[in-house]
Length: 510
Image 1 (cartoon, rainbow, N blue to C red):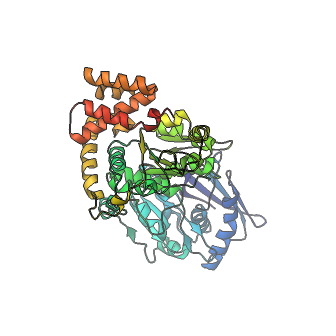
Image 2: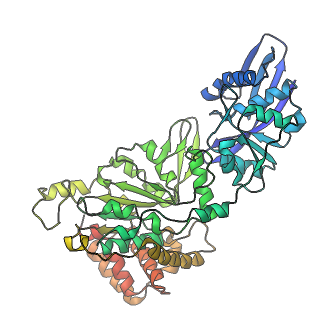
Image 3: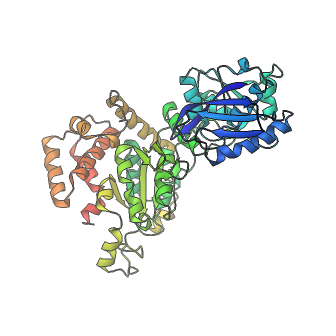
C-alpha cells in the first residue's frame, strides 16, 4: 500500500514542502530511504523502527521504500522521523489515511517513541500556512514557537503514541495558541542600565547617536576605560523590537537551533559578542548543513567585536559586504543559502599594542611604527563603514567616586524612540530603509542636503581629514540623526560639526 504524508525542510531561513511517500511491497524485508537523504535522515530508519515497536506497532515484514520528494534536493536532519513513522502507520493500515489530509508532521523520534524538538520550526510553520495546510503536528517543546504563526492550527505531542491515538479518534491533541503581541509586551527592554557607567559623557552621547540612527560605532581607548561596559548597555537604549522584526529574529534563531525548549518568540534585540578567535564560518555562517553565523544571529541587534584589532584581518574583511547589503549569501559546492544580517556593529580596541598610547602617562612603550601597524590591522575600507569613531579615555577618580548617577537607559531610550519615529515617517515608502544609517545615495541626496554654510563647514572638514566619499556620506547620515534627536527639520552647523568630531581616527590620520 502507498501512503503520502506532508512535512517540510529548512533551507537557509526559509522552508520548502516535502512529500513523504511510503510504499509497502512484497519481498524480503528491507527499509530503504531515497530522495537524496543524508546521514541523519538515513539513520532515522533505526529510530523509526525502534519507536514504532516500542509504542506497539512493529514494522510489517515487507519491502519498505520511503521517498522524500522533491527527490533532487538534498535532505538533512532528523525532523523527518515523525512523518516517516506516520506514513508507515498509514501504509500498514494502522491509521486511516484520510485523517492525515491537510496535516503536516515534523519531529525527531527517540527510541522509546518520545518526540524531541527540532530546529527551524517557525519557517516550517510559515511555509505550511502559505501553502494552505491547516494543521501542523510538532513536538510539544516546539509547539509555542510554531503557534506564533497565525492562521495555522498547531498540535504539540510528547510521543508517537499520542499522535497515533489522535489520528485514530482517541484522545485528541489540544491546539496550542500564542499571542505574539502579548509576548512582545512582556519582553520589553531591560537588562544592564546606562546609569551604571560613571563619566564618559562623550561616549554615552555617541552611544545614543548610534542607537538613534543605527550607526556602526568604534570605541577606542585604554584598558579599563569602560568600552565593554558601554557596549553591553547599547541594547537597553535601542527601540523595542516590532512584531515583524521579532519574527525575523526568531526565524534566524530557530534555524540555528537556539530557541529554548518551550520558547515562542525572541522579544529582545540580540547582543552577540564572539571571541576574537572566531572563524569565517562562525562569523558569517557555514557548517553542514548551512547555519547562520554570528552576524545573522545579531540581526536587528548588536554585534560587539571586543579587541577588534586582535581578530584575523581576513575574518574582519568578510563583514564589508553584509554591512552594506544587510544580508549574506553563502554558496557551497552542494548548497547555498541567504541569511539576513542587518546588525549594528560595535567594535572596541586599544589605541596601541600595550593599550596606553595617548593616555597622558608614561606607561606606553610603543613607537609610532608599532602603533601604526597595530591600527592597520583594521583595514581602511572596513573603517570607512563605521560611522562613529569615539575615543574613550581613562575615567578620572572624581568621576568614579561621584555620588551623582547619570541618565538611565529608559530616559535615553525615550529620545532614541522619538528620533526613530521621525525616521520611520520619513522612510515610509522606501523598502529596506528604516533608519538613517541604512540610507543609500538617493536618500542621502534627498534628506541630507546641506545648506551653504553647512556645506562650507563640511568641505573644510573633508579636506583637512582626507575623508573618502563613503566617509563623507556617513558624516552626513550622522548629522541627519543629530538633527532628528534635536527635532530639527534640517541639518545645522552644530550637527555637522559634531558629526565630524566622530571621525577620531581620521583626525589622527590613522
